[in-house]
Length: 134
Image (cartoon, rainbow, N blue to C red; front, side, top):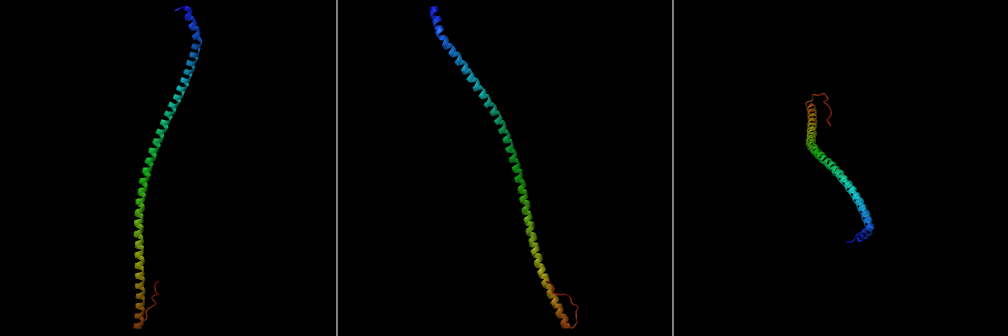
C-alpha cells in the first residue's frame, strides 16, 4: 500500500480515534462510579451483617430471659397453688372451729339450764352462774 493512502486513512481515523478515546474515558469513569457504588454496597452489607448478628444475639438473650421468667412464673404458680391449698385447709379448720364452738355454746347453755333446774328442784340456791352464752 501506498504511504499516502495510509496517511489519508490515518487522517480519516483521527476524529474516530479521538471519539474512541473520549468514549473509553467515559466508560472508565462509569466503571469507577459502579465500582465505588459496589464498594458502598459491600460496606453496607458488612454493616447489615454486623447488625443482624447483634440482633440475633439480642433475640437469643431475650429468649433466654423469657425462659428464665417462665421458669420463675411456674415456681410462683406452684407456690400460689400451695398457698391456695393451705388457705382452703385453714378455711376448713375455721369452719370446724365455728361448728365446734356452736356445739360447745349449746352444751354450755344446756348445762346452765340443767343446773338452774336442779337448784330450783332441790331448794338449794346456787349462786347466779351467769346468763346464757350467746
